Amino acid sequence: MKPFNTQSQNYEIDLGTQTPSPIIKTSEMITAIKELQFSSTAIDTYLTCGLKFYYRYVLRMMEKNEISGDVEQTDVGKIIHSILFEYFAPTKDRKLELADLI
Image 1 (cartoon, rainbow, N blue to C red):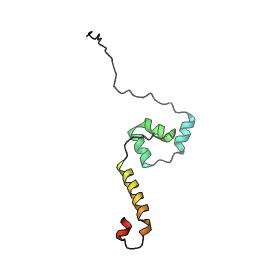
Image 2: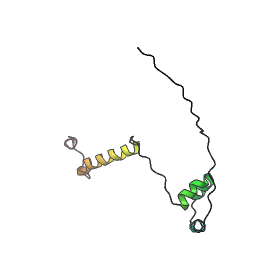
Image 3: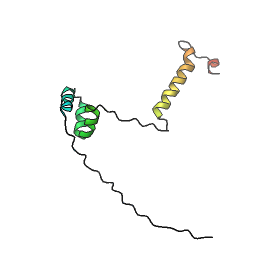
Image 4: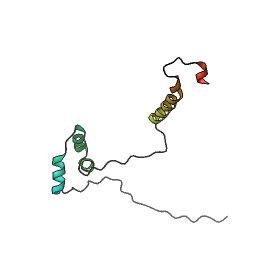
């Protein structure tokens, strides 16, 4: 059997966070900010992360909803509730009989 030819590889990865560059406020942005109706959530967002506030409230960008392959427990509950509701709908407002379950 022939021996494998191996070579070592080294990579440098910088996992540090960088402070984002300041965003220069244009007159349009200032006008948009002045027209905002500040909710407690908006103020909290600003205090937590000014950049997130900028994207969400000034640019009106929404976070992308992640789609996972896993079904959430609340979704399972909603599906089961919907199925049971349809199944038992004909028996509404009357006593449930054994024949209804067959």
